[in-house]
Image 1 (cartoon, rainbow, N blue to C red):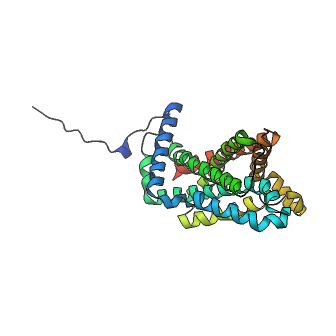
Image 2 (cartoon, one colour; image 1 turned 180 degrees about the vertical axis):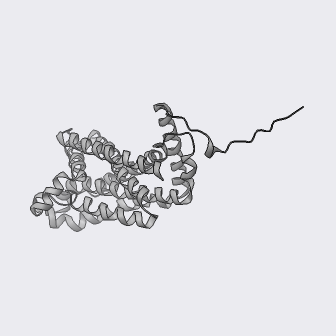
Image 3 (spheres, rainbow, N blue to C red; image 1 turned 135 degrees about the vertical axis):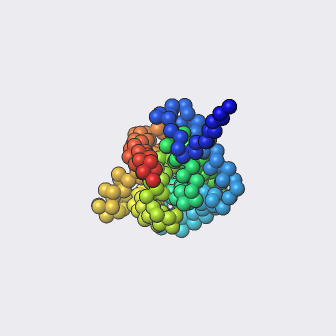
Length: 272
């Protein structure tokens, strides 16, 4: 009798399916999101930027700039608290790109690339997990603001809407830094590039001062800065409890960022 031995086919040589269904894409994304949350629980120091930083920055910016900009701290809080939420969420987005670069350097993404999964899932999964970080940052910033005297006119509903918008905006803006994580050569380089982008987006916005106090070229940039659009919407929701046109513009700006950087990131990931 003749026996035939079958050599196992390495996963790297298996033919991947031509298409992955939307349901499978969502399931795979959520699985990788869970993996990212497990990593967070095992390395709690990665949460310092959304736990310790809001506590320090909120108190520091309010008491240092409140008197100089608005005359007193109480008058400055309705302006600075939504601005700090935008700034803190954007800072947290930087960690998304840096962590992605570290995972790429560790080789774990080489395994993801040969698995029969949607190519967007390894990128979107950690970003979904990071939405928890944005939520913590927004809630803590509002909490510290209320402790030092901030009274949001929008009430609980307005604050909840502002937190939801901040989380969505963070997820959208994180695609920019995900792209940086894919094109950077190492984690240090990605962090450097991200900070060069993060600081102008934050400080050339309406986060800390009214834009009409800026020189005309800077004011023009600040008015169209997506961070300014988000912060204006946050103020309308938290301070007035109103869903204004600014909220629509903020959502449109977030959609444009995703439409540009999500395809760029996926295309770059496929070529690696």
